[in-house]
Length: 131
Image 1 (spheres, rainbow, N blue to C red):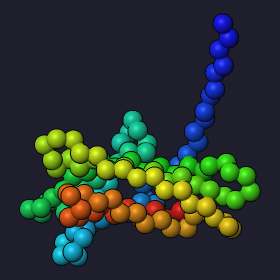
Image 2: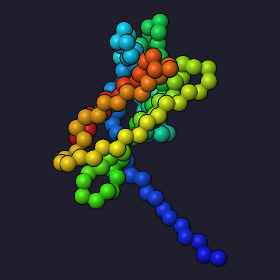
Image 3: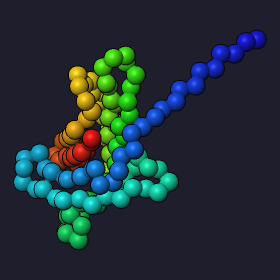
Image 4: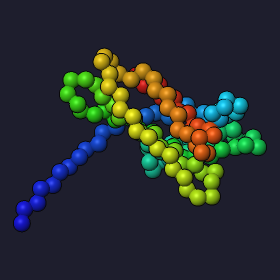
């Protein structure tokens, strides 16, 4: 019996904590909370996010943000993964999306993504300042 084994190596662009900014925003524009985030020491793509710290409506999330190059030939292509786990609910609720960016020249300068939360009442926005 013969076995064929494939290895798939995933390389990521290291996302420094200072290149990210998180904000909690209601979709009607009524509430905007600044957020603080810390990388989880055991998982460099995962961040603990606290919005509106020390306010009556403090919100907590776990976010995964990863940027990785995809080899598609001549055009630079990047996959951006953005997953959010809402830690304010009794049951675990995950929200996720993946975006592919194809560039004609250069590298990623900025990416802004919104992940809808709370039945689309609000969103956790992430801003990535690439380079």
